[in-house]
Amino acid sequence: MENLIYSLNATVPVFIVIIAGYLLKRIHWINEDFIKAANKINFRITLPALLIQDLMATDFYQEFDLRFILYCAVVTTLSFFGSWAGAKLLMRDKSIIGEFVQASFRSSAAVLGAAFVVNIYGNTGMIPLMIIGAVPLYNIYSVVVLSVECPEKNVTQEKTLHTTLKGIVTNPIIIGIVIGVLLSVFRVDFPQLIDNTLANFARISTPLALIAIGGAFEFDKAIKKVKPAVVATFLKLVGFAAIFLPFAIYLGFREEKLMALIIMLCSPTTPSCFIMAKSMKSEGTLTSSVVVLGTLVSAFTLTTVIFIVKSMGYL
Image 1 (tube, rainbow, N blue to C red):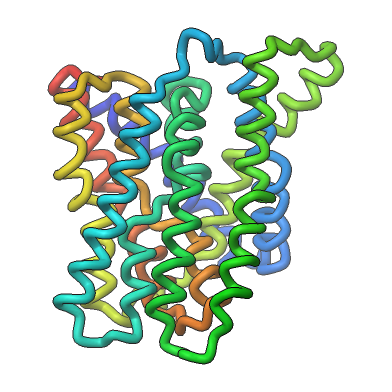
Image 2 (image 1 turned 60 degrees about the vertical axis):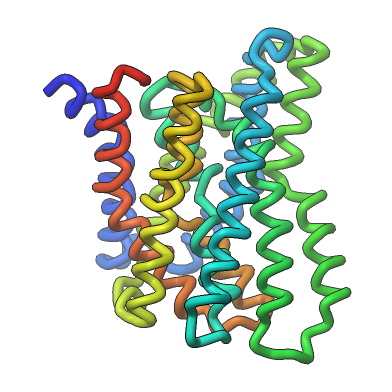
């Protein structure tokens, strides 16, 4: 019972705030403009502020773990190529392969990941190190598969690749991580005025993101492309976790590192997948279905995974 309560305490508060966002949208207290603005503020300001704050408090000379970062990168790479190979061999509708692959391997690691870990540990823990290993590859691999499998063959690949590479370099989350790492490595201490300002922005990151995710839900889209959506959701929430979490435990990852890997492997597909799919000339229905379905189902699957791992004494 103690382990079940621990697991529910880790997940249920997060999803209650998501549900609140959904209800607020339904009663018209928030609208699409609010959601777009919230996502923009969170992506460009509050989430980078949260990562900078936590990285500054991290002693990189003691906590930096190249082995952990490399494991995140290897798992991301194997998940990507595994889902692509499977889709090429088994999927009849070749026009949705790009969407299927991106939705199958790309987690909402930064937003929901930070939310879960903050809810448990009070800070982002190993999430920044996980993001270093996974998030740049999420963007690069998504560009590759959406370009190669694009249903519109007249897309200018060079322009798309250039734009996306520029987007990766200028990504606020990646910039926030770089700044936080440098501040930690050089042991920079800000005046109290700046520390308090940074903390104020960091505090609103998680609730603002969760309300926006809930408000963006469109459940009617989840019934479209049902079969591939269910398969992609299974891979994202359960399939890859069943393969790679036992290896992580075998390699000795525990506590915050193991939780970061659970978040990476078991978090639902990030909503930004839909934006990228549409911008790269894919239809987008499958992606939106997986985002909605995955976010809903992960309330149960993520709780179950945390409960099992906690019961085994690894968290």
